[in-house]
Amino acid sequence: MQKAPRQLLNIMAMVWLLTSVGIAIVHGAEPSQPGLPIVIPVAADGVQRASITLDSYSYSPNHLIVEAGKPVELTLTSVTTLIPHNFIIKEPAGNLSIEQDVSAGKTVTITFTPTQPGTFPIYCDKRLWPLPSHRDKGMEGKLEVR
Ligand SMILES: [Cu+2]
Image (cartoon, rainbow, N blue to C red; front, side):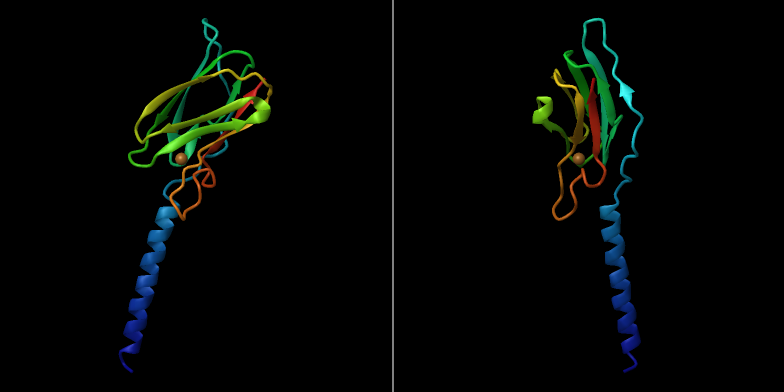
């Protein structure tokens, strides 16, 4: 009977350890805060260019404002060392269907021309089962077409 308290302590220590590790995995990074809207300038060649940084779990900047009818060129740079992300804008109403993977530490450039005014969600749908998707962790933004 004298061993009971010690076993209880061991179990409690184990539970504490597992819980701490679980919390550390789920909260690996703080979700992005709502960013200030960024108006992407139109370059002399008529292209609207911007650079976006992808991290776990954010886009920065994450609120992009562009003009309809002019090409948009986004340079997507991942600053993670392990976690893959993507950049999705799927909006039939906006005539947009973009899905671009961005591997850890890589940079890719995408080009598209928005034609319909509106505000469309940007998000990352990657997930490590059974954890929530990156979007659920705050990896989202918006494209505002004017
Ligand atoms: Cu992601």
